[in-house]
Image (tube, rainbow, N blue to C red; front, top):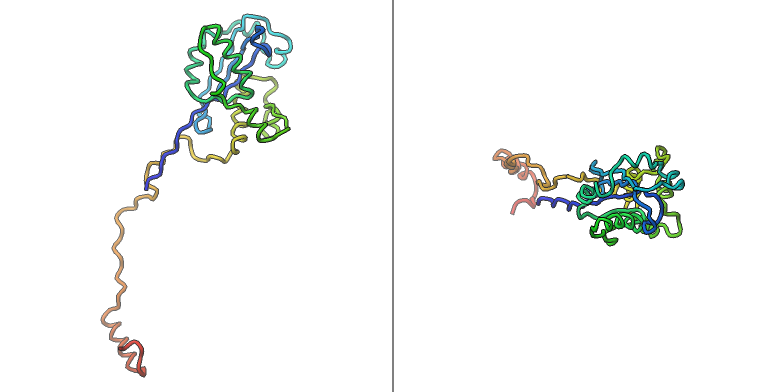
Length: 230
């Protein structure tokens, strides 16, 4: 019987960098980073953009991501990337570390353009996953990278795409570990379970020959009332 091909599950791991902590008080997004997963395996497709927030960058935020107002002023507004961004997301579930924070900023930007918000129900929040799996333990991205021994040595500053790539590794660990799914994302399992080796050979004869039967009878002649004779 042919094996059934595995169901394809697309997810988008998403992260943002911002000017601060509160979109309601005027803080804006300065970077978006996304990584596409198919069956929890990165496909190589990513979405990344820097955004002009049209405002200053507080020192506290600059110390986190290092994105200056001068640098960001050379990049598009959110309105200039929204179509490509939403197209990349599609209708896939969104894997986000502290989903309420990132979606709060994204929905604030969408609201300025009279676009419908992204539902929080669509998000898989890895902070919640971590707190359920490790009650009482630290659930920051840095703490989870340390727990799972994920290398962050090349991450001096936060970056949306870099953090999304780290979150991919954390998400896989939180949902079963690196060996939960060893199949290729695009594996074709529709073929036969046993390879076709051509037509089977006819069975070899195993019955005794006439010479063997005669020799057996001769042997029985030397026995007293052999049980092999009726």
